[in-house]
Image (cartoon, rainbow over all chains, first blue to last red; front, top):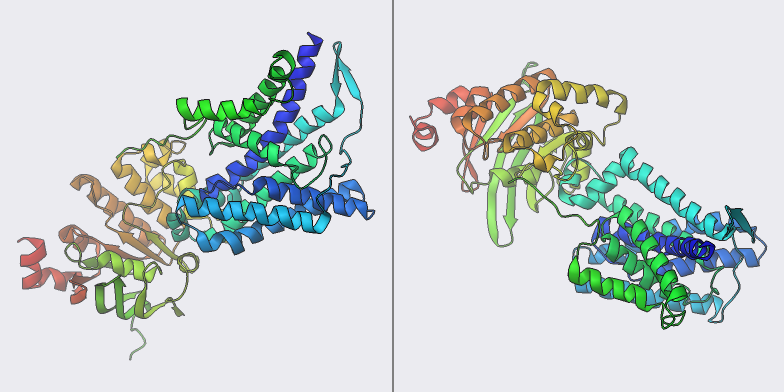
Length: 293
Length: 242
């Protein structure tokens, strides 16, 4: 029983990382209708930025804050410079552009920091806490906590502020938004900046559990896609629950199903994507608009 | 020029606009005075909507448009809105998945005096009680009449100097349309908003308008006070039906 709880909690912790990256995907998909294949690479780059700063003696908390700020600026710049010129083009064009961005960022990181892997310091102390006979890792609990804070802040931004309302409006209907005076371009830049920041958090959370190299987020991106697909690509709540479901089921399958083990765990998200697309393409929480004529 | 000459809030001069190879406006000119209700009349395809879109910077155009001392051509739609021009487009421009209250807040989203937005929201609900009872519902779930009320109310939430309304009567029952115009006329008077309204129902709108301009095939064929337009023989035959 204790083992089951630990496996589930660790699954939720892994799932929280997937959820964070899935949230970044959802933020961009909702505001621009683009599935950003470069989201994982952007997060990897941000994580390298953090590592780069700590390696020259900057303290970890300061390095993280600086990297998050740089990620925000970088995301906004990418929208302005790379995405804006192809705005509104066919989906295939946009896919190719974000794939190009993927390769560009991946190679830029390799050129700057090399292709070897490095250890990344954990944000949280080692050790466990006892909770009714179950030992839970502080890091796992910390990761879940960070995700909840991120989700809470995003909720406040989008549901409780004027800026958030303007961002939602710009995503829903750019033409009507311009007519009420919203600077739609600026809202899209903000959306990309936010997504890059949330993605960076995912990278910084997961790096200590893996090794930091240019392919840090490759696997995570697949899980994040599964989470976003499961939750519905335009639902933030769906991204979080999707991430947790994927994380837990992956961990359960890896632990209790002998054939799967840790080598075939990647089949879990792929299976989820396949089944969701076949059975319910809008995902668990995807919007189906109803409007009176 | 004498001192009591009314001030033009909006001056449209020699405006031409095209959609691709199709010329929609062939050099139209008219003025809207501060505080008046002006109507753009004319049949389908005459260029009424294009005129509003030209003012809001939504079509490529040539010619001059001045609003309150600012030259508008070349400015973005959002910049023109920020100058105090609210445009309620064809199809109403509501955000169907957002609540009625959020739609109204969006109307006021660029205002500097956010402290008085809450008051204006209450005033909106008083003027349109049906919006008040549905404030938490998504705009898309409202009836056609209610959606048009919402669109008009959203435009007014900007406290615009100039409100551009594109066929508010479209798809509404005659009684609902009249009620809407009565409320609208009262509100623009109270807020001293200048109104330029595009309308096919010439009879109705001439009851509320001070001045009207009649468009045909991209040209202004007649301009005058509401009384003059009503008295015009050709106008009566073509549009007013008596």
